[in-house]
Each structure stands twice: as structure tokens, then as C-alpha cells.
Length: 326
Image (tube, rainbow, N blue to C red; front, top):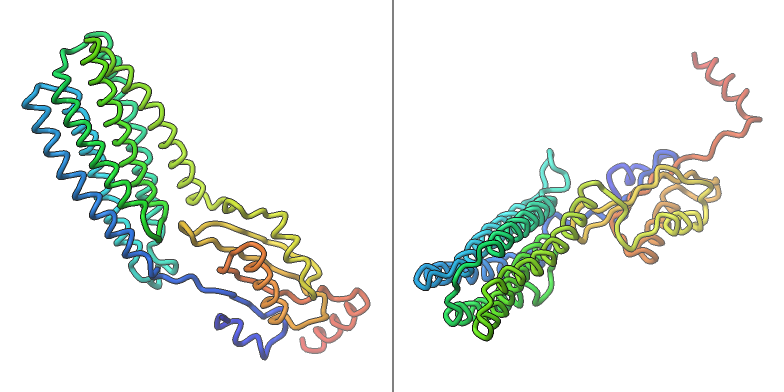
């Protein structure tokens, strides 16, 4: 697809040609599917959070109350993901030509930071429990924790099934899986308390799980920051990309080559190519864009052809013509 500039380039010089190989869509067909999955996971999480909080209050289990607090954080993260998913599907505007796609990335970043904060809080709580172990009613704790694991795995299955995954959905999935690990921790701790009466087992299991949560949060924050800092997309080598462009007939040189991610699943490439004079600029731009699509699976490519530099022999002639016009 040609941009307006490229359409005029059919009647202009190669230096004025501008080829836009593909315009990224502002609406994605699969955007609604992740939103439905997020809603289902949110309803499951909120429903069981209430059950767990009531159970923890009745049996005087701090572990269950803490896990209910963790699920409250998960519910907030899922609600944020739902809002971001809805905002991201809004059409582009004159002020926001790419639309609101990065709302997903910002929500994922917020969720990653929230995961890290929650993990640090769990570690602090675990240290406190190690110093002063609390008496745990292990049997009800085991039953509720097992039910919580089933709920979390169900929510994780809902979020992971089908197509249309993005950073936002994966961030929500990371929250749910972290909570599932918390349920596993509570189950193990309850079993140890039942078998050996060692109440500190809850603190040990919590610290182990927190380390795993911190690692997941670190990866999530790193991934979102890579998008926000417009780093080269994973799987795209700038050196190989340059080789692909230079291999196209009619290309003498290139400059201002950029590759970045606009939002999850939406990579873009822009480049200025200097022509060698053997082909029309529009044809060269079309060929370069197609080669990038085939070799690197990037469909949003903008190629700006530039006329070859003037020969030194012609410089005096050009200068004379300018003087006469003046």
C-alpha cells in the first residue's frame, strides 16, 4: 500500500518517492478474545478472594488472609488489564496516529511493578513469621488453599487458551500463576504443619515463592521497558536487516535504519535508501519492503528512496543553471 507521498512519487523524482509497505491496523480482530478471557479470570479471582478472606477470618488463618490480600492485588491487576485492553482497541486519531496500543504495554509495566512490590511484601511478612511463628489451623487452610489452586489454574487456563495473546494478557497470566504458586506454598506449608507441627514451614515456602515471583516481575518489566525504549525487536538482527536491504537491486547505500516495537506483535522498520540510478525509486522501495517482510517477518516498513549523489563533473553545470535562474 502506498502512502499519499508515494502515490505522487509515480510522477516525481526518485528522491521524492516514499514507500510505505504496510499500515498497521488500529483494530485487531483478536483483541476482543483476550478481553473476554481477562473478564473471566477477573470474575473467578474476585469470587474466590471473597471466599478465602471469609475462610481466613473464620479459622483465624493469617496465611489465608494474606493470600486473599494477594488475590486482591491480582484482581486490581486484572481490572487494569481489562481497561488497558479496551483502551488499546480505540481507533487512532489525528493526535495519536498509532492509536492507544501502548496502553497494553503501560498496564503490563504497572502489573510487573505490582508483582515485585507484592513479592517484597511477602518476604517481609515471611521474615516476621519466622521470628514469631503463629499457630496455624492447618486442615481448613489446606482445604481452602487447594480450592484456591484449582481456581488459579482455571483462570490461568482461560487466559492462556486460544489466540490473540499480548504483553497485557501475559502480564495478567503472570499474576494468576504467581497466585497459583502462593496456593501451592500454602498447601505445602499446611501439609508440613499437619505432619510435623512446624509452623515456620509457611515462612520458608513463602520466601521460595517470592523469589520466583520476583524473577517473573523482572522479566515482565524488562520486556515492557524494551518496548517503551523502542529497542530492536527480539528476533530481528539489525546487521541482517541491513544486509537484506543492501541486497536489493538499485540500492547504492542506506542510512537512518530503525527497527522497533510499537506494541506487542506490531514491529516496524524505517530506512532511507540511496539509489544507484538503475531503477525507479518506487520500485526499489517496493522490493526492499517485500524482502524485509519475507526475511524478517516485519510488515510495517517505511522506505524513503533518495536520488544518487551528483557526479562531480556535473557540479559546475548545476551551479551555472542555478546562477541563471537567480
